[in-house]
Amino acid sequence: MPVDRTATELVRDVQSGRLAPSEVVRAYAERVDRFGERLGAFLWFDAEAALAEARRVEERLAAGESLPLAGLPVAIKDNISTRGIPTTCASKILEGYVPPFDATVVERLRRAGAVVFGKTNLDEFAMGGSNETSAFGPVRNPWDLERSPGGSSGGSAAAVAARLAPAALGSDTGGSIRMPAALCGIVGFKPTYGRCSRFGLVAFGSSLDQIGPMARTVEDAALVAEAITGHDPKDGTSVACGPVRADLSEGTLKGKRLAYSKELTGDALHPAVARTFEQALEVLRAEGAELAEVSLPSVRLAVSTYYILAPAEASSNLARFDGVRFGPRAEGPGHVETVARTRGRLFGHEVKTRIVIGTYVLSAGYYEAYYAKAQQARTLLRREFLEVLDRFDAIVSPTAPVTAFRLGEMSADPVALKMLDLCTIPANMGGFCAVSIPCGLAEGLPVGLQLLGAPMRDEALLGTAHAAERALPSIGAPPLN
Ligand code: GLN
Image (cartoon, rainbow, N blue to C red; front, side, top):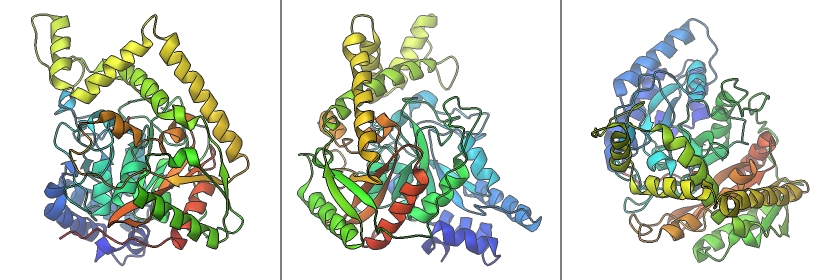
């Protein structure tokens, strides 16, 4: 069965002629047909379109083209622009919007022979951590349909975990690739800021956003990462450097220096997650990793600082959605009323809250007290982490302090939901690379282990994560039928 194979195996089988891209697409489309609706993972899916793309890949292969992602279906988070395919950011304000261009990552996927395999559900404009702020309904966790897949890339995470796609793209502003990857039991990789083009990603917090792969294994994530990363002249913050080419052949943790810190395990850590994390550390130690405790005091500022900076950037980025340029419009008696009505009616509550907070912290009189202070804290945090990363290969922590929570459980307490970002936010604040890999089950639900690496050390980080993955127990697939 094609759906039992990893992305790497699939591509190898397609390249060697053992499997046709259209067979792969058909097998996955059948899974989407069976489970897609129940999970709420996709906002747009067209099996015929995917099949047509697979056939074009077949022609390119027959013509002798060498395609590194030959025939690989990749689901795309719906805040990444796709030419001719709706891109809604799970918001009513973009309902029906069809971009006239592909994001650079999508263009690169297509060039590598991948098949665009549906657009996945997310928190509205990627703002949230539970997928419940989507204007088109929540995503369900394939491990337990009453639970959240995490967010904001919950649709991509659920799709990959439930074998509706072998790989997907997510975006990560404060943890949105890694947190849902952890809660759904898959691998999620956020590259170093600037290594993956943001051109065509609908901007949330431009200084924090990165696109990255979500897949079943580190090898699969590395395969997709290699295709989508690398310098892009269309993105002014893109680093002039080649793609992330991880060498996973070494496969050992011997001599790897890993730091862990009390500040990153925090008080909110669920006891079952704490136990699974400690067992994982034991496994890594037994495999030859050298573990040492470090102190990262500025972590206590991370969440509050992020929730000043991210809304500040969002309030500016979302100003373009005015009912004039994109999507639907709620007509008013004049221009100002039209803009106000459109934004008032078509943005959801979480998005509006953030626009108000962002506008407030940037306004004259409050800028110094909030925005400028938060930037100072960001610099402190970056320096503190860099100092540790000078001496260690990676900083390890749980990816999230909890396992998948029940849908609705967090909606009454938005602050508690935001506190779950404690371990993931520092990587965005500092521009570091970070990856979440499954490290076990706690009470039947997946737990993620995060490895955070120094800027531009993505290759080495993936190597370490690959070795760790081999040593850790495999959690298998969710019991879905
Ligand atoms: N949960 C965080 C937030 O709500 C992170 C979102 C993200 O990474 N896109 O902002």
